[in-house]
Image 1 (cartoon, rainbow over the protein chains, first blue to last red):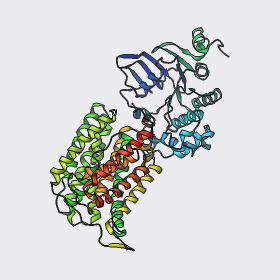
Image 2: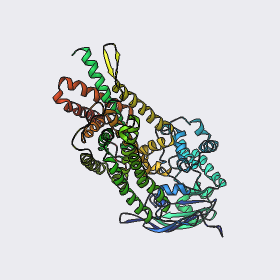
Image 3: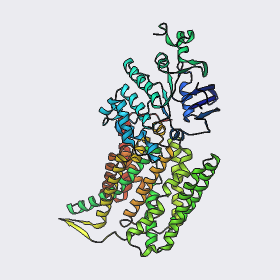
Image 4: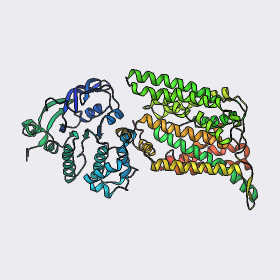
Length: 247
Length: 345
């Protein structure tokens, strides 16, 4: 972790309950400036729950979330967006009956409300990253392929010019080639000064682009460390990387 | 029935149908964005018409006191929330919209003599008083229940409807009012005589529909409302707040309602409770559009208007029965052809 600089996101002692059932127990996570941090773990480990609680979609029953050193009380989703935190959910949550262009435009909504009118410029920047979306700009989002949808979801989040981008399972349901493409883009975002919290089941892909990783199991952080260490960790190899290990 | 009568009925039906179409669009909008079946829509029709009539009769409309009272209530609720959640920067806005705005409206009305103003100015004054009641109603009655089920929201809507009808009786009395036509005269097209108010109604409704279409297709706020209707979570993740979308859709609905009331006031006598029936006919139109399609809802509403006109000729005692019976085949058709969608959590 970087010294002398407060992390972009700092989560301490986070607990989340669904009714009486606690799904997340005392989770602590840090994302530094310009870092890609990944949270890997099996299905049902609480990865999505954690993102939802950080984003303000789910209430936190305990714990502190700090964004750039500032404590967020019970900030709602809209407050998080205006602070510069964006979440791309597992469902992608696109506006299916709207054009690609309109989906992107709405990504700028909070900036537009704040008086920022350079959405067309931002859209060109985003099209430069995803040329495929430019070709499909007039097409309805609902008619896109799975890979294109994930690209659109990512592109729409980038329209907000986030400082922290949280991605929930971006590889879910995508062909390996598309996953590679998406992860290549995610890795370049770091150079644009966007910190990334990447939640993934595809541990191999995630550990290859991330700087630091956490392993979440049954609602608890089971293991953490730099990705270089995690990728060689026998437990990680056995549970998440399969027999192939590093390659 | 000869051609003359048929044309006359057709004209009547299309005129009323245009009003129902406006209301059905508002109902579809409010339901799509907030999941509220907006029963009090009709009360905004009555409030709009009766506020205008009060101005013309030289009386001070009770809606002014309602605006001031509801404004104070919203201000108190919002101020408590803002202070509790330490969001003091919201305070000037809250005071501005809920206390200063009604006070300015009152000052304007007391400074001018509304009865002597031209019609257009009276219309604007009426809208100034009635339209803000829409978003204020959302704030007080529906915003705290944003996560409730459609049924709970419907029951609250019925409650708001009864409260508004009661207040309407208190403010405007049991007497009905009719305002003079926007302009006199008529237009002859062969054997058909179209009177000027019909043209006003059709022209204004069409213009309003065009403006609304432009708003939804071309402006970012219009797109934000559509986005909320399509995917509430997705919209929130873009920073489109559910509360903002709800208030905006209620604002449009109250604008459409009050405006429809002003259009219809020269055609029919409006009583404090007339709005309910007019709103329900808009609702039948909205049902034809399955509460989701704007063009189908507008067409359905037009059909309701025509059906009403012709059944008032053939079976005037059963006029309302025939119109509302239309809902049954439509519902049967819808339930046979559409798949049940699980309600969003």
